[in-house]
Image (cartoon, rainbow, N blue to C red; front, top):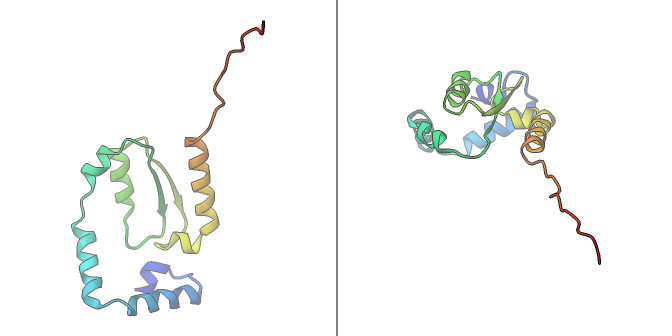
Length: 123
């Protein structure tokens, strides 16, 4: 399971952390979570999103297929996305790349412009 989540090139410490986390969860809970993910269909909710969307896609993800991002973009073509050469645990394996992408998205979406105030002559 560590291979699928952390990837083959993950540091030993990350693989060990994944293993500890997995062992701390009852197998029936893991099974229920897996079923919930498989049965999840959020397409209607995605269609209703009325704010900018951003997706970080792990190019080496063995759990979430590229087709999931394709479907999101089909439903919301204006979705901003970036693909990062990383496994499922993208934030843990490529935190700087992920942070840079998030900051770029926020910069583009949250530009603040000073309101234009017309000055009137002082009498």
